Image (cartoon, rainbow, N blue to C red):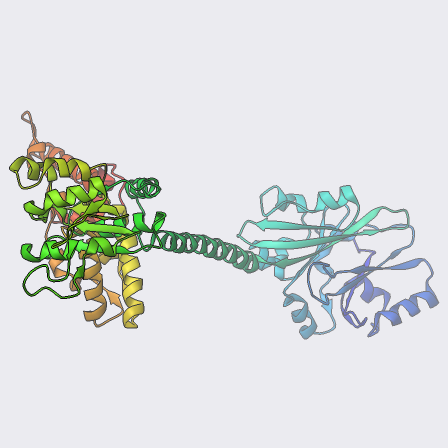
Length: 552
């Protein structure tokens, strides 16, 4: 059977690029331009009609190709689409170079008849669907759509809507295609052919996805940075990243609105002085002075003159102009008494008068002086034990302990270790003009350490690393003093037991399971479990998976 429909492909300028054998039969000497074919048909055969099909996609910036169909005016036979006749069609190109040019087109060209039979495809289909073009031509679009080669199928949409349709298609080989299908109509308004143009936008979609992810991450980090900066600005550098510290800061904000005396408790280095400064900053006294006295730093013989001051000539060697004490210097502001447990017993009664009466008499003075000062005290000692031992006045303790705030040690708020370490790292990088960063293993080591010196020790460790480490990445080898196993990492062997006789391999597995499970329950990460059990991290991870522990 010989197909009776001619197909001609041309450039946008009308230059003929390709044609099927029907055209070759009609024109033994093929003209170079479609205009010549049109003129020749008009001269010799008025029954043949030329229908132009624009292959350009409106969504792609591509000059595309034009297709011209040569068919009887009253019908468009579909015999040419049948399997036995199509292989003979569309193979007679003007030159091998033109044939290669058509197949090298980046865009896919796909022509089907009204029944869905595939008349023509170029080589782009092989990239898009992973199927040889010879295995596509002559079959129906339903054959491939039913097998999930592309989704969604565009053919039924065009047949239903009878207009140009553009869709995004996913193919079985993972491609994302932008497909535009143009219906071709006869004079009766019936679809006789559909010409599809498809462009591979897989990389574009991936770039779009990566860009969206990057934008989302940038927005997230921007919000986190703004929140962190806001917290630092509002809280004077007091960094909070745990629920417990959030509660403490909320308490400080409430306390700041009053003039009540505050007692801050906590181990050395937890941030007691920072909290005292925060209370001052958030109070109505924020524009007044913040005066600090470390009660453990002054000799007892100088303590009274430093705190209360003295009048001119109050004692031998005294200044003739006298001296203003720290209490007076704090007028209108806050007096922070650090290490309050170390205040000499003989001066505790005088401090009690300051708190109760808001007045004092300096050394050599004759009349009391009124003061407007808020007292905030802090200690790392148990004042109740000091009261019981007689080294601290009970009445002074209760006067100081109007509002008590206890700051937990860093080992009890481990979720703050990494944020604090990064904060100190950024601070010292700016200070020393460096660009140090902490490796993942180093971060794990920081989390594993018990930090007896708390936040102050962490700050000093980071500063030392920034100064002494000879490379930008700070690795665990530069922290040998942090490799000692902490109490947190000790696993109580008394918790493990085998209560009855059983095969040795089962007993060993039981103990292994209990040991790994107990270690993970306490330590929460494969790195720490490995360190505590003296095994490699990879082995710890395998055992945790074996015993259904969800680790990091």
